[in-house]
Image (cartoon, rainbow, N blue to C red):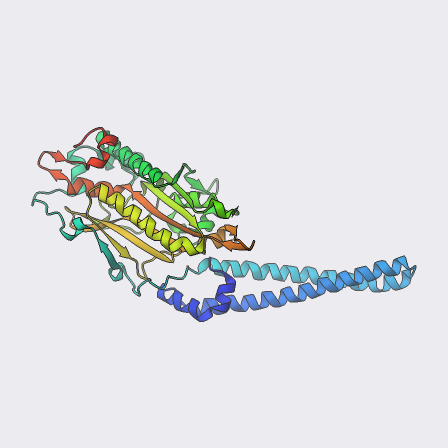
Length: 426
């Protein structure tokens, strides 16, 4: 959530940033917000004056009573009753203004970093890096199979069984498919531990406050599975529960940076998704993901973002996958991110790039909602910056590993995970 003071002091800059994110009618919502803010501040000033006057009269009543001037005291006592009634009305008005302001602030996305390019669609994203393997993409034989055929051929993932027990988009991993899935999770967690991340195993459901805290609500409400009887949401990513561990927390400077990693299943309704690009493992309602989260001081966050990107790149190198990094344009970046780099691996049989990670810097957007702060050297409270990234999301990693490494007699796996799988080939 943007800070109201920033919007008030940087109105035109805010509108410009919202336009880059293709936010509809930014001028109107900012004007509405500032108008309510003006009324709120005016009401607060009246309330402060009324309360001060009531306190002064109450003190005077006390002095008159002590002096034995009961009649004079009773005469001005009536005025305090009127002031109390006025104060109550002003407090109710103030609460209404604050509620309206909060509702508007929740609708406004984060402002994009200055390096975010203009653009409307994914085609406008900028390729900022290509790995050596990506510069010479693997060429497959004419009879190479896409992942949805390979998983049937080797009987490692069963979508029909998933449909039987749950529905489309909920696959069942079998035999070596299940072992490969578990191996990748353990590999990613061990690599994160080596990089200094503390592993967390959070709940896979969150309450409404957590959804608002990291910005999934109200923006992504339609994409989340909701358990109505309990008022809980199935998580779309481990980012939500892990970041919310620090909601309403004041950290100490020597505790920073916070570096957490978590493995969870993730749930997304993916409403409205269809077509060839969602076949097989390309898009699922339930999938496994290892997520890294960092909380840093503002001055450190963009260097941290680079370090996190380098870390994700190192994982893809170890898996021997061709990948590229894209800087997302204003029209494609998420609601809460100020800057986001997407990592895509090349899927040889499909002849297309698959997103496997997004590494984002949210600056103070989440911490303002979370009330997550620390005391600086002067003792002043400062909002922190939050960052997160997939490290990594498994389905499309698995798809690329299967497709890119297929041979006439099986699928060769990268050496980095042999000790985790217990086998070198499917």
